[in-house]
Length: 523
Image (cartoon, rainbow, N blue to C red; front, side, top):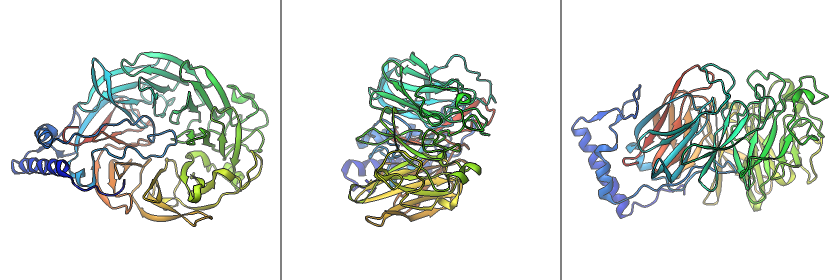
């Protein structure tokens, strides 16, 4: 998947025709701005209207596909479709379409290919704003198709009660699950935006934030809760599974007072000085293990006793979140807790190891990447316990910086690469060492980034200062950097000949933000 494919007849014809069209634009001095709505945009080649005919003459359709949830799949691999229509030789052909929306999308988009909305079959992009408005967009035109606004939400710009949860598409492709900052999960119809059901997953939405992306595990919608900036108690991180069909709560796993299997008020959990903590902060939320469907989450600062309190730990839960199976808790858990160095600022990334070994990489605010054996999380095959340590190895994150992003994990041609971006840079790591695996740097760059993704054999990283970098994933070589507005946790999706990148940060009081869509001609 990583290798450049031979330019077969129609592909070569397409590129030749597009090149001729672009040369014609240059000769005519035809450069301008391409955007769907008014507002500032960087100078780029004129939109696809002038080259769409060339695409048709070449007879090469741009492949369509779905991008149904954060990081593409339930295991949060960050690796999308093998064919997006965009190859290394195409990145110079990308042009810009911008969409101005009300609100800020401090998360990622999702996309469905060829679904019926508003009376016709089309591709549909969906995003959720920080105040819980979910907006459906036609990415080929930038047209807004529908908007769902949840009830009971204060959407005044600057209100600090927000969500940064990326929505998830139901496997039947007819529904989407979204979050709102009043602690409610909504099931909406893709065709109309109509609400099917709504369910609250917290007793205290003012303190327990829906920050993490929604996931789907078989018949269940999986939701994790965190806290708000400043670690203001009371809050209790918990994982909730909901019936996809009805919204009924199936199970609740509380990271504090884990012996209580229902939604609880954090203040009712005895034995702590803070009346809250052990939040789940990660962009990815709960990670689904392929095959077993087991859930992996990482917790932040808070108490740990190895029985009912699980601060600064990686936890493996049953697929329905009804049981805690195992844990990894670092030997310096007390230091992490005391120093506000949340382990759970990011989620475990699943990594295939040698001889079928199941591995995971766990980052955090300690600036380290810890390699774990999922069959022996704490170094033993026993269940959850107070035991500390047991990781296989560790290595510095890019620049030794705090990790708040989700890694992408690519396995191809007999090799595995783990891509990690943080505020100090972007790096790729190899799994080496045979039966005693460890991570080693493959390459690194000083350009910061949010959660990277791989699609169509290329690596895409959003620099929140305002750019999208497109790289060769094997070498890190920069193929093209395209401008975008600044942002925060936003990260791209790449599908159907398009890069879709929300921008903006939830801490601002902006009333509007811009979605950047870089696309091939005709897409």
